[in-house]
Image 1 (cartoon, one colour):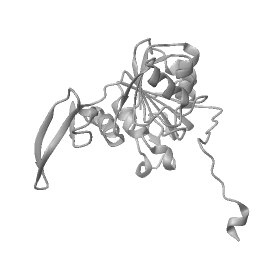
Image 2 (cartoon, rainbow, N blue to C red; image 1 turned 90 degrees about the vertical axis):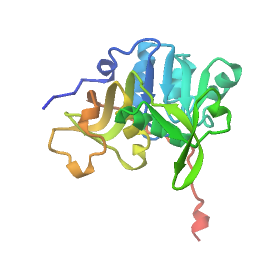
Image 3 (cartoon, rainbow, N blue to C red; image 1 turned 180 degrees about the vertical axis):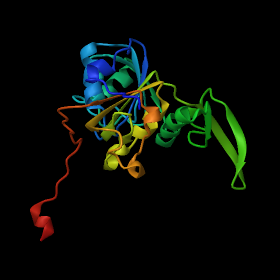
Image 4 (cartoon, helix red, strand yellow; image 1 turned 30 degrees about the horizontal axis):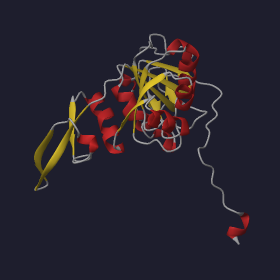
Length: 240
């Protein structure tokens, strides 16, 4: 068994340099690699291209890297909850590539499957398709146009899991699974932070979401805040 553990996030991100591309798991603030993002912030690397569903909120997660101007380009599906992300995009300070959410997930998975391109009907006839190849295919008896999109090939992939073992096998919890498995698949070097690190054999193989073959480094994170973007509560009177 190859022991893939490192002591902390700082050790895990050794090798990350200015100008690299990093894919990150998470959806909003759910399942984001909090410790790894903080380590990037402390290291001060800049001119990063980040691939993630969105950039979370202004003062947490990827929003912290945007505040420090460490990100030169965001490849994402959604802008909405981060005012600084929106401001930098509209002012031209930040290069942004908006990708349909399904296309984003599939391009991540394609990188893991070893497929250089995918074809999708999403984005055909829109700005998303400008400058890209479009081909006709017949699928389920219907011929229509499909847009060619390239698989993602990030230098590093950062993911966060609930449990992991020293061989890199990962288990996500609930909706925190979101994009994490797809992100883990595509990285040239994949780093996982987990809430609980266990010995090989302690995880039920039937419940492993990401096999250790995809993971290069793993460590047990700490001080998770697990913030909620928008807390919605129901008035007590509504139950009456």
